[in-house]
Length: 290
Image (cartoon, rainbow, N blue to C red; front, side):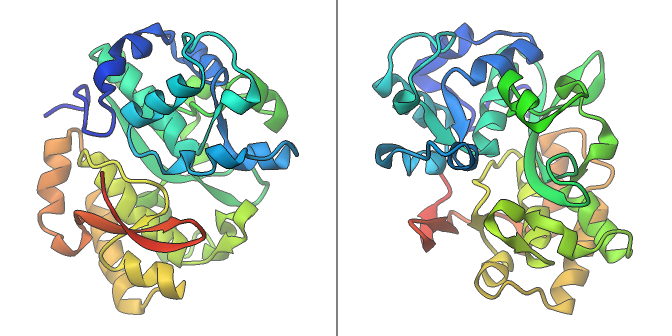
């Protein structure tokens, strides 16, 4: 298996033509996504909020479900701008998954990366998902959430199709930096939601290694030891050591989903399960992974 092949999550299903409508160039793609997709937290911060009918959008796990929902609201091509009521109200996961799907449809290797960035809040590492894609033999990071309006709103001046490596740390990289005393876990989290501390970056280690193995969960899915992290918002010292051992195996990053899966075979406790504990409707609920 290659990162250029669709996963069960990135496969557009009957909406392959809609995926083809999206621009192929990464910078044009990010701008186009703003025609029909907005982060639910951004909508709230801009004071127009999330419509009641769109509150569950961020729990749509696949490109096929995202596109079906978007088309049900407005059947025009995604290159045409929608009214706010017809938008999808998702998360960074959805921007990233759609971008990866577009790359894969062109035979370009692409993978979801789960980690933290330093460009949303000064002095803070904010939870964020990026799309890593292969260009001219090298891996580059695309922040697919940062279309033109988002770039202006956040004052982003770097090239979002090639995010500087210094501005992003994968789940494994950040965990090793925390364990090494280079980064304070209290500066890492989801700050618009008031979340910080060891438990959140600990959970992201599991999510990032899962995506590298071709399993693409939601940001609020928890399995294995992360079930307890999410309930107790704490990580035992034994679990911290286990995660450190896992993280070391994923830095540097494996070059294929097969290689990542083989590494993960040595850490059965870290493998995603068929059902996961997911934050839905204001509480943790058992949900199918797909």
